[in-house]
Image (cartoon, rainbow over all chains, first blue to last red):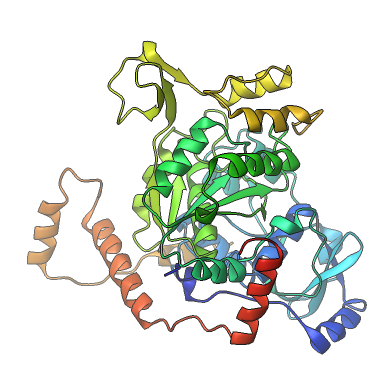
Length: 382
Length: 79
Protein backbone atom coordinates (compact mmCIF):
# COMPACT_ATOMS: atom_id res chain seq x y z
CA UNK A 1 0.00 0.00 0.00
CA UNK A 2 1.35 3.44 -0.89
CA UNK A 3 2.33 5.74 1.94
CA UNK A 4 -0.28 7.95 3.62
CA UNK A 5 0.16 11.61 2.66
CA UNK A 6 2.12 13.65 5.17
CA UNK A 7 -0.24 15.13 7.74
CA UNK A 8 -2.96 12.66 6.72
CA UNK A 9 -4.51 14.27 3.66
CA UNK A 10 -3.25 14.94 0.14
CA UNK A 11 -3.77 18.64 -0.50
CA UNK A 12 -5.30 19.70 -3.80
CA UNK A 13 -5.96 23.40 -4.26
CA UNK A 14 -6.73 23.81 -7.94
CA UNK A 15 -9.62 25.90 -9.19
CA UNK A 16 -11.50 24.30 -12.05
CA UNK A 17 -14.35 25.09 -14.42
CA UNK A 18 -16.47 28.14 -13.67
CA UNK A 19 -14.72 28.85 -10.39
CA UNK A 20 -11.41 29.07 -12.23
CA UNK A 21 -12.88 31.38 -14.86
CA UNK A 22 -14.28 33.64 -12.14
CA UNK A 23 -10.99 33.72 -10.19
CA UNK A 24 -9.04 34.47 -13.38
CA UNK A 25 -11.30 37.46 -13.98
CA UNK A 26 -11.10 38.61 -10.35
CA UNK A 27 -7.32 38.23 -10.29
CA UNK A 28 -7.07 41.09 -12.77
CA UNK A 29 -8.48 43.41 -10.11
CA UNK A 30 -6.54 42.07 -7.13
CA UNK A 31 -3.27 43.48 -5.81
CA UNK A 32 -0.37 41.59 -7.37
CA UNK A 33 2.48 39.66 -5.81
CA UNK A 34 5.17 38.84 -8.39
CA UNK A 35 6.75 35.38 -8.25
CA UNK A 36 10.19 34.30 -9.39
CA UNK A 37 10.83 30.78 -10.74
CA UNK A 38 11.37 29.23 -7.30
CA UNK A 39 8.27 30.79 -5.74
CA UNK A 40 6.17 29.79 -8.74
CA UNK A 41 7.41 26.20 -8.37
CA UNK A 42 6.58 26.26 -4.65
CA UNK A 43 3.09 27.63 -5.39
CA UNK A 44 2.37 24.88 -7.90
CA UNK A 45 3.82 22.25 -5.56
CA UNK A 46 1.59 23.39 -2.68
CA UNK A 47 -1.48 23.26 -4.94
CA UNK A 48 -0.72 19.75 -6.20
CA UNK A 49 -0.05 18.33 -2.75
CA UNK A 50 3.71 17.90 -3.11
CA UNK A 51 4.06 19.80 0.18
CA UNK A 52 1.02 18.30 1.93
CA UNK A 53 -0.19 19.22 4.52
CA UNK A 54 0.76 22.82 3.62
CA UNK A 55 -2.09 24.75 2.04
CA UNK A 56 -0.13 27.93 1.58
CA UNK A 57 3.02 29.81 2.49
CA UNK A 58 4.08 29.67 6.14
CA UNK A 59 2.96 32.20 8.73
CA UNK A 60 5.26 33.42 11.51
CA UNK A 61 4.10 30.83 14.04
CA UNK A 62 4.75 27.89 11.72
CA UNK A 63 8.01 29.46 10.57
CA UNK A 64 9.16 29.82 14.17
CA UNK A 65 8.47 26.15 14.92
CA UNK A 66 10.01 24.96 11.64
CA UNK A 67 13.18 26.90 12.41
CA UNK A 68 13.46 25.94 16.08
CA UNK A 69 11.72 22.56 16.34
CA UNK A 70 11.82 21.28 12.74
CA UNK A 71 8.05 20.89 12.99
CA UNK A 72 4.94 22.85 12.06
CA UNK A 73 3.01 24.42 14.92
CA UNK A 74 0.76 21.31 15.03
CA UNK A 75 3.88 19.13 15.60
CA UNK A 76 3.93 17.66 12.07
CA UNK A 77 7.57 17.15 11.02
CA UNK A 78 8.67 19.92 8.64
CA UNK A 79 12.25 21.10 8.22
CA UNK A 80 12.48 23.54 5.28
CA UNK A 81 10.47 26.77 5.46
CA UNK A 82 8.23 27.31 2.45
CA UNK A 83 7.85 31.06 2.44
CA UNK A 84 6.81 33.83 0.06
CA UNK A 85 9.00 36.92 0.22
CA UNK A 86 8.13 40.34 -1.12
CA UNK A 87 9.61 43.84 -0.98
CA UNK A 88 8.14 46.77 0.96
CA UNK A 89 6.58 48.34 -2.16
CA UNK A 90 4.57 45.15 -2.80
CA UNK A 91 3.31 44.67 0.77
CA UNK A 92 2.31 48.33 1.06
CA UNK A 93 -0.54 47.56 -1.34
CA UNK A 94 -1.68 44.51 0.68
CA UNK A 95 -3.90 44.06 3.74
CA UNK A 96 -4.30 40.98 5.92
CA UNK A 97 -7.64 39.36 5.07
CA UNK A 98 -7.58 40.53 1.47
CA UNK A 99 -7.11 38.38 -1.60
CA UNK A 100 -4.08 38.88 -3.81
CA UNK A 101 -3.06 37.43 -7.14
CA UNK A 102 0.30 35.67 -7.46
CA UNK A 103 1.70 36.65 -10.85
CA UNK A 104 4.31 34.72 -12.78
CA UNK A 105 5.69 35.93 -16.11
CA UNK A 106 2.86 38.47 -16.40
CA UNK A 107 0.06 35.95 -15.85
CA UNK A 108 -1.99 35.18 -12.74
CA UNK A 109 -0.87 31.80 -11.42
CA UNK A 110 -2.80 31.61 -8.15
CA UNK A 111 -4.90 33.61 -5.74
CA UNK A 112 -4.02 33.91 -2.08
CA UNK A 113 -6.05 34.88 0.98
CA UNK A 114 -3.51 36.94 2.91
CA UNK A 115 -3.38 35.78 6.51
CA UNK A 116 -0.25 37.53 7.68
CA UNK A 117 2.50 39.89 6.53
CA UNK A 118 5.63 39.87 8.68
CA UNK A 119 9.34 40.59 8.73
CA UNK A 120 11.97 37.94 9.32
CA UNK A 121 15.53 37.58 10.52
CA UNK A 122 17.78 36.38 7.69
CA UNK A 123 20.77 35.57 9.89
CA UNK A 124 18.69 33.48 12.28
CA UNK A 125 17.00 31.73 9.35
CA UNK A 126 20.37 30.80 7.82
CA UNK A 127 21.93 29.77 11.13
CA UNK A 128 19.05 27.38 11.83
CA UNK A 129 18.31 26.06 8.33
CA UNK A 130 21.83 25.93 6.87
CA UNK A 131 23.81 25.80 10.15
CA UNK A 132 25.96 28.61 8.79
CA UNK A 133 25.76 32.26 7.80
CA UNK A 134 28.72 31.94 5.45
CA UNK A 135 27.82 33.76 2.23
CA UNK A 136 29.83 31.21 0.25
CA UNK A 137 27.11 28.65 1.02
CA UNK A 138 24.75 28.82 -2.02
CA UNK A 139 21.64 28.54 0.16
CA UNK A 140 22.81 31.32 2.47
CA UNK A 141 23.78 33.53 -0.48
CA UNK A 142 20.33 33.07 -2.01
CA UNK A 143 18.52 33.62 1.30
CA UNK A 144 20.40 36.85 2.00
CA UNK A 145 19.18 38.22 -1.33
CA UNK A 146 15.53 37.56 -0.47
CA UNK A 147 13.11 40.40 0.30
CA UNK A 148 12.44 41.71 3.82
CA UNK A 149 8.77 40.63 4.20
CA UNK A 150 7.08 37.24 4.21
CA UNK A 151 3.45 36.92 3.14
CA UNK A 152 1.48 33.97 4.49
CA UNK A 153 -1.81 32.56 3.33
CA UNK A 154 -3.76 29.76 1.71
CA UNK A 155 -3.42 29.62 -2.07
CA UNK A 156 -5.55 28.33 -4.92
CA UNK A 157 -4.02 27.59 -8.31
CA UNK A 158 -5.77 29.11 -11.32
CA UNK A 159 -3.21 28.39 -14.02
CA UNK A 160 -0.42 25.92 -14.73
CA UNK A 161 2.91 27.35 -15.90
CA UNK A 162 4.37 25.65 -18.98
CA UNK A 163 6.64 22.73 -18.08
CA UNK A 164 9.39 21.85 -20.59
CA UNK A 165 9.48 18.31 -19.19
CA UNK A 166 5.70 17.81 -19.20
CA UNK A 167 6.13 14.28 -20.54
CA UNK A 168 8.10 13.38 -17.43
CA UNK A 169 6.13 15.36 -14.86
CA UNK A 170 3.77 13.49 -12.55
CA UNK A 171 1.91 14.80 -9.50
CA UNK A 172 1.40 12.93 -6.21
CA UNK A 173 -2.17 12.01 -7.08
CA UNK A 174 -0.96 10.46 -10.34
CA UNK A 175 1.99 8.54 -8.88
CA UNK A 176 -0.29 7.16 -6.17
CA UNK A 177 -2.66 5.77 -8.80
CA UNK A 178 0.31 4.58 -10.88
CA UNK A 179 1.99 2.70 -8.02
CA UNK A 180 -1.31 1.03 -7.14
CA UNK A 181 -1.95 0.12 -10.80
CA UNK A 182 1.48 -1.51 -10.91
CA UNK A 183 0.65 -3.47 -7.77
CA UNK A 184 3.56 -1.99 -5.83
CA UNK A 185 3.23 -2.09 -2.05
CA UNK A 186 6.71 -0.79 -1.25
CA UNK A 187 8.33 2.03 -3.21
CA UNK A 188 11.75 3.60 -2.67
CA UNK A 189 12.10 7.24 -3.66
CA UNK A 190 15.41 8.47 -5.06
CA UNK A 191 16.22 12.17 -5.04
CA UNK A 192 18.90 13.45 -7.39
CA UNK A 193 20.35 16.56 -9.00
CA UNK A 194 23.06 14.72 -10.90
CA UNK A 195 23.52 12.61 -13.99
CA UNK A 196 23.75 8.98 -12.92
CA UNK A 197 27.14 7.37 -12.45
CA UNK A 198 27.80 3.76 -11.47
CA UNK A 199 27.66 4.64 -7.78
CA UNK A 200 24.13 6.00 -8.12
CA UNK A 201 23.10 2.93 -10.09
CA UNK A 202 24.50 0.67 -7.38
CA UNK A 203 22.64 2.54 -4.62
CA UNK A 204 19.36 2.49 -6.56
CA UNK A 205 19.62 -1.20 -7.40
CA UNK A 206 20.64 -2.11 -3.85
CA UNK A 207 17.44 -0.41 -2.63
CA UNK A 208 15.33 -1.92 -5.40
CA UNK A 209 16.39 -5.39 -4.26
CA UNK A 210 14.22 -4.90 -1.16
CA UNK A 211 11.20 -3.03 -2.50
CA UNK A 212 8.67 -3.50 -5.30
CA UNK A 213 9.46 -0.34 -7.22
CA UNK A 214 11.91 2.52 -7.54
CA UNK A 215 10.76 6.10 -8.04
CA UNK A 216 13.58 8.15 -9.58
CA UNK A 217 12.65 11.78 -9.06
CA UNK A 218 15.32 14.30 -10.12
CA UNK A 219 14.89 17.95 -9.28
CA UNK A 220 14.63 20.44 -12.10
CA UNK A 221 14.84 24.17 -11.53
CA UNK A 222 17.40 26.46 -9.92
CA UNK A 223 20.67 24.82 -8.96
CA UNK A 224 24.09 26.27 -8.33
CA UNK A 225 26.57 27.00 -11.14
CA UNK A 226 28.56 23.90 -12.01
CA UNK A 227 25.62 21.53 -11.44
CA UNK A 228 24.27 19.60 -14.42
CA UNK A 229 21.62 21.24 -16.60
CA UNK A 230 18.13 19.77 -16.29
CA UNK A 231 17.93 18.46 -19.86
CA UNK A 232 21.25 16.62 -19.40
CA UNK A 233 20.01 14.90 -16.24
CA UNK A 234 16.76 13.83 -17.89
CA UNK A 235 18.46 12.55 -21.07
CA UNK A 236 21.15 10.70 -19.08
CA UNK A 237 18.55 8.91 -16.95
CA UNK A 238 16.55 7.95 -20.02
CA UNK A 239 19.66 6.27 -21.43
CA UNK A 240 20.42 4.47 -18.17
CA UNK A 241 16.85 3.23 -17.70
CA UNK A 242 16.57 2.09 -21.32
CA UNK A 243 19.73 0.00 -21.20
CA UNK A 244 20.13 -1.15 -17.60
CA UNK A 245 16.85 -1.13 -15.64
CA UNK A 246 13.90 -3.52 -15.61
CA UNK A 247 11.10 -1.36 -17.02
CA UNK A 248 8.40 -2.70 -14.70
CA UNK A 249 10.28 -1.74 -11.58
CA UNK A 250 11.02 1.89 -12.35
CA UNK A 251 9.06 5.11 -12.53
CA UNK A 252 10.97 8.19 -13.67
CA UNK A 253 9.48 11.60 -13.16
CA UNK A 254 10.90 15.10 -12.66
CA UNK A 255 10.02 17.48 -9.85
CA UNK A 256 10.36 21.24 -10.30
CA UNK A 257 11.70 22.27 -6.91
CA UNK A 258 14.76 24.29 -6.00
CA UNK A 259 17.72 22.80 -4.19
CA UNK A 260 18.36 24.57 -0.88
CA UNK A 261 21.65 22.78 -0.11
CA UNK A 262 20.51 22.52 3.52
CA UNK A 263 22.04 19.06 4.04
CA UNK A 264 20.34 17.09 6.85
CA UNK A 265 17.25 19.30 7.08
CA UNK A 266 16.77 19.03 3.34
CA UNK A 267 17.11 15.23 3.50
CA UNK A 268 14.02 15.17 5.75
CA UNK A 269 12.24 17.57 3.39
CA UNK A 270 13.06 15.39 0.39
CA UNK A 271 11.73 12.35 2.25
CA UNK A 272 8.46 14.13 3.16
CA UNK A 273 7.95 15.19 -0.46
CA UNK A 274 8.46 11.61 -1.72
CA UNK A 275 6.12 10.32 0.98
CA UNK A 276 3.47 12.55 -0.57
CA UNK A 277 4.19 10.95 -3.94
CA UNK A 278 3.35 7.62 -2.30
CA UNK A 279 6.82 6.30 -1.49
CA UNK A 280 7.13 4.03 1.54
CA UNK A 281 10.94 4.28 1.61
CA UNK A 282 13.45 6.98 0.83
CA UNK A 283 17.09 6.49 -0.14
CA UNK A 284 19.40 8.75 1.82
CA UNK A 285 22.87 9.03 0.41
CA UNK A 286 26.16 10.17 1.82
CA UNK A 287 26.17 13.96 2.36
CA UNK A 288 22.59 14.18 1.08
CA UNK A 289 21.77 17.70 -0.19
CA UNK A 290 25.11 18.86 1.12
CA UNK A 291 27.54 21.31 -0.39
CA UNK A 292 31.23 21.89 0.31
CA UNK A 293 32.17 20.82 3.85
CA UNK A 294 29.26 22.41 5.68
CA UNK A 295 27.78 19.10 6.84
CA UNK A 296 29.24 15.83 8.04
CA UNK A 297 29.11 12.99 5.49
CA UNK A 298 26.49 11.04 7.48
CA UNK A 299 24.73 13.91 9.26
CA UNK A 300 21.77 13.44 6.95
CA UNK A 301 21.41 9.88 8.31
CA UNK A 302 21.56 10.91 11.97
CA UNK A 303 18.78 13.48 11.69
CA UNK A 304 16.22 10.79 10.85
CA UNK A 305 16.54 9.54 14.46
CA UNK A 306 14.75 12.70 15.57
CA UNK A 307 11.62 11.82 13.60
CA UNK A 308 9.98 8.61 14.82
CA UNK A 309 6.70 9.92 13.36
CA UNK A 310 7.97 10.73 9.85
CA UNK A 311 5.88 8.01 8.20
CA UNK A 312 8.47 7.03 5.57
CA UNK A 313 11.34 4.62 6.12
CA UNK A 314 14.82 5.92 5.31
CA UNK A 315 17.17 3.53 3.51
CA UNK A 316 20.76 4.33 4.34
CA UNK A 317 22.85 2.99 1.50
CA UNK A 318 26.58 3.43 1.86
CA UNK A 319 28.73 5.10 -0.74
CA UNK A 320 29.64 2.67 -3.55
CA UNK A 321 33.05 2.24 -5.10
CA UNK A 322 34.65 -0.10 -7.62
CA UNK A 323 36.85 -2.81 -6.08
CA UNK A 324 39.44 -4.31 -8.41
CA UNK A 325 39.66 -7.44 -6.27
CA UNK A 326 35.88 -7.92 -5.97
CA UNK A 327 35.56 -7.04 -9.66
CA UNK A 328 32.48 -4.86 -9.26
CA UNK A 329 30.67 -2.07 -7.44
CA UNK A 330 30.61 -2.66 -3.69
CA UNK A 331 30.55 -0.67 -0.46
CA UNK A 332 32.70 -0.73 2.65
CA UNK A 333 30.24 -2.98 4.47
CA UNK A 334 30.57 -5.81 1.98
CA UNK A 335 34.12 -5.39 0.67
CA UNK A 336 37.03 -6.70 2.81
CA UNK A 337 39.79 -5.33 0.57
CA UNK A 338 42.09 -2.43 1.23
CA UNK A 339 42.07 1.07 -0.14
CA UNK A 340 44.66 0.10 -2.80
CA UNK A 341 41.99 -1.95 -4.59
CA UNK A 342 39.25 0.64 -4.32
CA UNK A 343 38.46 3.15 -7.03
CA UNK A 344 36.13 5.84 -5.72
CA UNK A 345 33.81 7.71 -8.05
CA UNK A 346 34.25 11.38 -7.40
CA UNK A 347 31.47 13.58 -8.76
CA UNK A 348 33.95 16.46 -8.97
CA UNK A 349 36.47 14.38 -10.94
CA UNK A 350 33.69 13.12 -13.21
CA UNK A 351 32.49 16.66 -13.93
CA UNK A 352 36.04 17.73 -14.69
CA UNK A 353 36.47 14.88 -17.19
CA UNK A 354 33.18 15.74 -18.88
CA UNK A 355 34.07 19.43 -18.93
CA UNK A 356 37.26 18.54 -20.81
CA UNK A 357 35.37 16.25 -23.20
CA UNK A 358 37.05 13.13 -21.81
CA UNK A 359 34.97 9.96 -21.84
CA UNK A 360 34.71 8.57 -18.28
CA UNK A 361 35.80 4.93 -17.89
CA UNK A 362 33.04 2.32 -17.79
CA UNK A 363 33.48 1.63 -14.09
CA UNK A 364 32.53 5.27 -13.46
CA UNK A 365 29.76 5.80 -15.98
CA UNK A 366 27.83 3.56 -18.36
CA UNK A 367 28.97 4.22 -21.96
CA UNK A 368 25.40 4.93 -23.10
CA UNK A 369 25.08 7.57 -20.37
CA UNK A 370 28.49 9.05 -21.17
CA UNK A 371 27.50 9.30 -24.86
CA UNK A 372 24.42 11.31 -23.95
CA UNK A 373 26.21 13.63 -21.51
CA UNK A 374 29.08 14.28 -23.90
CA UNK A 375 26.64 15.00 -26.74
CA UNK A 376 25.69 18.27 -24.99
CA UNK A 377 27.87 21.23 -25.93
CA UNK A 378 27.76 22.54 -22.38
CA UNK A 379 26.18 20.15 -19.87
CA UNK A 380 26.70 22.45 -16.86
CA UNK A 381 24.94 25.48 -15.41
CA UNK A 382 27.06 28.59 -15.95
CA UNK B 1 8.39 35.91 14.57
CA UNK B 2 7.18 35.24 18.14
CA UNK B 3 9.01 37.13 20.86
CA UNK B 4 10.93 35.79 23.84
CA UNK B 5 7.79 35.63 26.00
CA UNK B 6 6.11 33.27 23.56
CA UNK B 7 9.21 31.09 23.19
CA UNK B 8 8.79 30.02 26.80
CA UNK B 9 5.71 28.15 25.65
CA UNK B 10 7.53 25.78 23.32
CA UNK B 11 7.46 23.24 26.15
CA UNK B 12 4.95 22.31 28.80
CA UNK B 13 5.02 20.02 31.83
CA UNK B 14 3.28 16.68 32.20
CA UNK B 15 3.50 14.37 35.21
CA UNK B 16 4.75 10.83 35.22
CA UNK B 17 5.31 8.61 38.27
CA UNK B 18 8.73 9.05 39.87
CA UNK B 19 9.31 5.28 39.64
CA UNK B 20 8.82 5.42 35.88
CA UNK B 21 11.02 8.50 35.63
CA UNK B 22 13.85 6.68 37.44
CA UNK B 23 13.39 3.60 35.29
CA UNK B 24 13.67 5.66 32.09
CA UNK B 25 16.63 7.59 33.46
CA UNK B 26 18.44 4.31 33.96
CA UNK B 27 17.36 2.96 30.59
CA UNK B 28 18.63 5.87 28.52
CA UNK B 29 22.14 5.91 29.97
CA UNK B 30 24.70 5.62 27.13
CA UNK B 31 22.04 6.04 24.46
CA UNK B 32 21.53 9.01 22.17
CA UNK B 33 18.83 10.41 24.46
CA UNK B 34 20.07 13.31 26.52
CA UNK B 35 17.17 13.48 28.98
CA UNK B 36 14.05 11.67 30.15
CA UNK B 37 12.02 14.41 28.47
CA UNK B 38 13.63 13.82 25.06
CA UNK B 39 12.98 10.06 25.42
CA UNK B 40 9.35 10.56 26.42
CA UNK B 41 8.83 13.01 23.53
CA UNK B 42 10.32 10.50 21.09
CA UNK B 43 8.19 7.61 22.31
CA UNK B 44 5.01 9.68 22.42
CA UNK B 45 5.49 10.96 18.88
CA UNK B 46 5.91 7.39 17.65
CA UNK B 47 2.79 6.19 19.48
CA UNK B 48 0.70 9.22 18.50
CA UNK B 49 1.67 8.85 14.82
CA UNK B 50 0.61 5.18 14.91
CA UNK B 51 -2.72 6.03 16.51
CA UNK B 52 -3.36 8.82 14.01
CA UNK B 53 -2.55 6.50 11.13
CA UNK B 54 -5.12 3.98 12.37
CA UNK B 55 -7.77 6.69 12.64
CA UNK B 56 -7.22 8.03 9.15
CA UNK B 57 -9.71 7.03 6.56
CA UNK B 58 -8.62 5.50 3.28
CA UNK B 59 -7.93 8.01 0.56
CA UNK B 60 -10.94 8.67 -1.53
CA UNK B 61 -10.53 9.23 -5.21
CA UNK B 62 -13.50 8.99 -7.50
CA UNK B 63 -13.63 6.25 -10.12
CA UNK B 64 -14.02 8.91 -12.80
CA UNK B 65 -10.86 10.73 -11.71
CA UNK B 66 -8.94 7.49 -11.38
CA UNK B 67 -9.96 6.57 -14.93
CA UNK B 68 -8.79 9.98 -16.18
CA UNK B 69 -5.44 9.61 -14.43
CA UNK B 70 -4.94 6.08 -15.76
CA UNK B 71 -5.63 7.30 -19.29
CA UNK B 72 -3.04 10.07 -18.94
CA UNK B 73 -0.50 7.61 -17.51
CA UNK B 74 -1.09 5.29 -20.46
CA UNK B 75 -0.75 8.16 -22.94
CA UNK B 76 2.57 9.13 -21.36
CA UNK B 77 3.81 5.54 -21.55
CA UNK B 78 3.88 4.86 -17.82
CA UNK B 79 1.42 1.98 -18.16
